[in-house]
Amino acid sequence: MPFICFPKKTWLILWFLACVFVPAQASDKPDVSLFTSDVITEVAPVVETLRAPVYRLELNLSDHLLSVEGKAEVWVTNTSEDDWNELVFRLYPNALGSQMVVTETLVDGAIVAPHLDVDDTVLRVPVSLQPDEALTVIFSYRLELSPEVRSYGRLALYQDALSLSHAYPTLSVYRDGEWLDDFPPDLGDPLVAETSFFEVSIDAPDTWQFLTTGQTLEQQNVAGRQTLHVTTGPVRDFYMAAVR
Image (tube, rainbow, N blue to C red; front, side, top):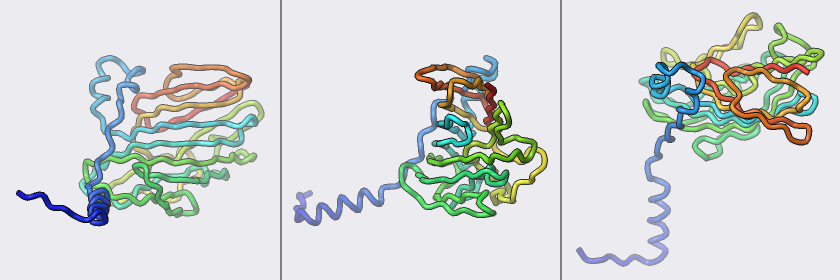
C-alpha cells in the first residue's frame, strides 16, 4: 500500500481527532490489600474481590478544630444494570447546621461542574458511566463546624471533646433506578451509604488525642502538629472523635 503524504496541518487535525475520540478507559481498581490489615485472615481474600467504593481522604484540621480543609478521592464502580449520567454525593453537614463547600470537582482528572440540590445537601456530579465501568472523583472542599451543638452533637465541638461525623462528601445509594436524595432526617443516624473502604490522612494539633474508625498505621508529631494514617476494612462510614 503506498504511503499517503498529508500536509502538516492535516496531520495535526488527525492527531487532535484521535486524542478526542479515543474511548475513555475505566479507572484502574485501587489495591485493596491495604484495607485487609484489620480483618480476619479467612475474610481477606473475599474483601479483595469487593467492588465497593474506595475513599482516600485528607483532613487538615485547624488549631481550634472548627475548620477542616479536605480532599476526597473516591473510586466508584457502576454496579447496577443502568447507565449512569450522574453520581449523587450527600453533604450531610449542611443538614446539621454546619457548612460544607466543595470548591473543585474532578472526574478522571477533568474538571466538571456539579449541581447542588435539596437545600445544599445533595451534590450531583455529571458522569458517563456504563455498568461495570469505574471512575475516580476528586473533591476539594472546606468544612466549617457550627458553634452550636445540634442533633445529639454528632458533628460538634463541645467543651474538650470533638465529634466529627460526615466530614467528607458521601456517595449516596442507587436503588431501583434512582439515587437516594431526600433531605436527611434530624433524628437518629441519617446516613445511608454503600459499604466502602477508607484510607485517611489526618493533620491536627497534637494537643488532642484521636479515636477513629479502623486502625492507625502510623502517627507522627512535628512542631505542634500530628499526622495520622488510618485505614479501614469494609465499613459503612468513617468517623473520628478527639479529646484533649
